[in-house]
Image (cartoon, rainbow, N blue to C red; front, top):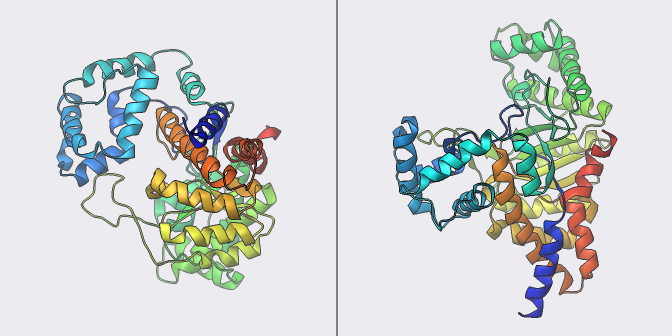
Amino acid sequence: MPTSQQLEQRLLDLIMDINAVDVHSHVPAHEPFARSLRDLLGYHYYTELAHSAGMGKSVLDEPDEQMIPALLEAMERIDNTVQYGWMLELARELFGFEHDRLTPGNWEPLAEAVRHAASEPNRARDILGQSNIGKVFLTNSFDETLDDIDTELYVPSLRADTLVFDLHKPQVRENLERVSGVTLKGGESLKDALSAVVEHFWAHGARSAAISLPPGFRAYRVADADFNREAERTLTGSGGGDRQILQSGVLFHLAECCRQNALPFQLMCGVVRDAYSHGVPQGTDLPAAGHSLRGLLPLLNAFPEVTFCLSVLNAGQMQELGAYGWIVQNVVLSGHWWYLNIPAHIEPDLAARLQSVPKTKLIGYYSDMYKLEFGLPKFNMYRRSLARVLARRFVEPGYGTEDDAAGVARLMLRENAVRIFRLDEE
């Protein structure tokens, strides 16, 4: 075995032993693992890829006996993808699947294994133990109950999209009044309601806020008079006005709440929602090229005490993101989001980050998963890429020793997240 491969394997062995922190997922705290094979195959990666390869959307409305074979038949056309590899890896490691491919002829024993495993006690802990993941951040709507969340395993995170972009919807305003206990009349009452929500989340163990922003979103500080005017129009349902004023004002106030509660703010930048009208559910969003992060600068400059964890969706922004990590003190680079979550994108971007951004400002990876089972293949994919890049683009060129590389890996997979999100204070 060549020396470089030996070095990569030694680093991988060390990296596989690191108990990782997953700082962004969509795992539902009260239904965290799969109870059926449909729960796994229904992950949007498989339905959208199969649909892209020719499967009809109506398949997804069929019962398991029709839906699963039809989906698996379509998945034969996507077996070249990393995502197909995730399914095989989790099926083998978590459910004892022994075949090289998952087909319409061999899925039923796997389905039975999934159903049986779901009935086992401490199933969530077992999955995370096999995946070597110690904490999983959730994505919680502002009106979601936070009671009975197992905070030994899960970390609540306030998803702010609805608060920023959907206050024009009556149901959102009604829910905000209900959970905050504040009657919404104008700008000041809206700020009071937002503050109450953030404080409620903090009291229930939340350690971050998070939002996904459209390409080119421009955040700016809004004058109180302008904010109050737009808030009153929206809260009274009178319509009209400039919705961007309200959006920026709410975002800035949420950042202020993060400052007051020492919460990092995770900003996920660049998704165009509902761009493809013919897509399957959760398969309609796309990235957009040609946009910049500069619209965030007023927000980053206004709140130097807030740590902003930035992710991008467009490969053309990776160098710009790296420069923000290089220059802007309160910016942390976080993970490899969505369409960039394949080794072909991860590895060159990871090499650039390692060679240009302080190691204490790198959160290596998050799963973005909807069920805990996907943490295993997703994190393992990243661990293999991390070992390869550290060996070939860090140790071999002489930027650090093998011990240095192991230390960087610990920072990226665990220690930075523990420090940034203050998980050691729980």
